[in-house]
Image 1: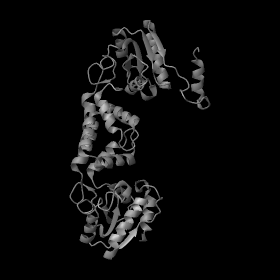
Image 2: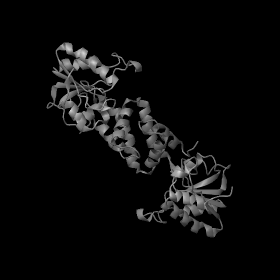
Image 3: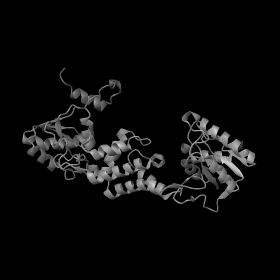
Image 4: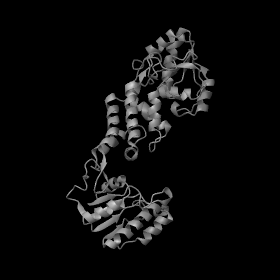
Length: 199
Length: 199
């Protein structure tokens, strides 16, 4: 054993493997926590417990929530007829940070990926259809990741929803704002040409 | 508020600021934990609590321990007459990984750094002298970081101990100057132990 304490060994092995954390970083975090005031460390432990104890999923949009209906779905100032479908909760947070969207969301919890064994049965499309039906949605914006899986998922949802007479759009894929055309990859540039808009 | 859950907001703000963790990584870790089995997440929370509840400092060498005397000091197969002085507990772990050292350690808990207000009074040199006296230490190896602060600390300890007729050596600066002991590879660290020179 490299460490002189079992507790230290234990926390390092627990931290190792969290996103972006290798063994060296885990050791560093553990020794950092050891130097912090007791109260702060206990607060962190409690915050981790609360994550599992308090967080549930919104019954309407499947986003993270602490109430049966999340704060976005419950907000009457939001336009419930404009629905943005995303893969994961962090996509909601990313779009919220733009302050450009006043509609509501639906979180799929993933994307179609036959290679990983994720087919239409694994994703909860039924709750998406229920959401659209119950809330009289008029336009669905697909904000899937611009990847093969995201494309497949967007295509699948389009086929599912279009027959209902609802407008389905997808967020523009093109060159990122502030970037250099010279460095854009071919696929992105080709996509930005196809998706050109009138000035 | 960007997040739809106060618990999520709380854990992200707690994780942000830990070593190597920014806000983006904190969000990523929080959402990762949310997807993990409840039991594993609770084990992580408990491991963090245990860190503060179970870990104390060895009464002899000031290293991290769960007993009043750490497993290295309590090991009778170790050469108690050969003492390696380091700045931090992680330095002990780094040297232990080389499997080149069979003596014991003393952890200072820092280095002299007048600019940061760390003078001789802030570091517990009295416990180092007591360790040397009580355990009949014959050679002291100084394994400070190869930095200005480490050099100053090594020089200070040399002046403190040399008059007692004890041999004082310092690990060879095979370790790259300006770097951190924690990040030295085992081979370099082992070489620096073997090539220690007289102060």
